[in-house]
Length: 291
Image (tube, rainbow, N blue to C red; front, side):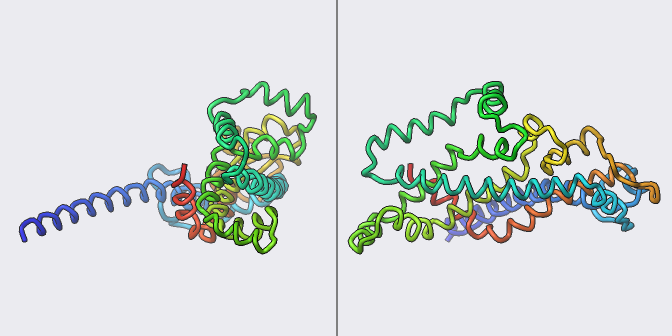
């Protein structure tokens, strides 16, 4: 009895420590977000005051009106949406057709090709060769392909998808071949549908990666009409370049406008995540089990 009580007490202490850590992590995550939202909704006299602003004392939507009246925000939104959908779709197609043969035992020199792909995770050509490749040799700078093609395939994501494909029983493939199915049919009718948790997880990574990217836009895109949302946001937050915004009729604090731009840029990802959350844990865990 004493041992059971001691074990129960240890478990209780452990649970309390774990929950305290989780609450601390949640607070570290939520408090900055509340600060951003509150400032974006606050009038100038509140936004300029010191201290934490976790809840808006007064509601003022002039910051959002000014940001949404900025024409470049809308064009950047559209460019980012196109980049995200096209880039994610292309990446997922390449992951599926690349991971499937790597997951089959009968692939010739399977170990060599796997190590060759993993090798690229540790070594890269560097920024200057990449710039020369995109700008001079391929000639795709100032186009959406300069933002999509260089990062279309991640070796890490490819290995994750391959590991998940390997966890699918070989008996399913053998049964399908007995029924006359070829490899393409097996891949898209059996393997891919059974891999929804992994594919949804990797898709979320690709979506977030494309949505948050801005550095490649700064390097390769020359026209403002082709800027992506995060680069426009970067110019607003860091460079203070808020042009073509008519604020003659209303006084808007600069911080309010910056925080409003930040909220506008992150809302789509926040709204998307709940739909993919149920796949996230299962996709990461199962895809990382087999080596």
